Length: 181
Image (cartoon, rainbow, N blue to C red):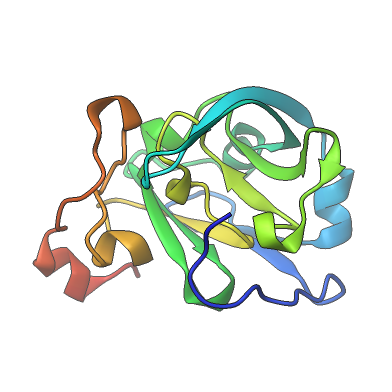
């Protein structure tokens, strides 16, 4: 398990998840509302940029597609910037984010996610490198143009396809300065 910095202590009483940006119905929910949403399981392999893989994982959680449908993505929405605790972010094209296997993961192999593994909730986007599956996730913003997240601003590839070995690649510096709205 790899992470940068310390593992945050998350107060579930004050925890909020927000969806905003190029959506018809921005919303915010608390921990109890997240737990009340329908859940799904995703069986997958995960691949780390540092060249290790873990096979045959089963994650459980809230489908990302359900949240996108609730928000109603507007026509100009083509990218997503995911936000997490301690200021961490990661970016994804909407076509990579809006897939049936993607979850706000709450469990791994039937057990609640530990804080070291991104609990209480992490993003799961299993078809790209695992840094795109942000730990300690707390929301996302739908954008009309791509914006690099934390790791992408620090040299990681903008997409992160493990089969194409998209590990590293500097983002467009103009977009780095502008940032999301």
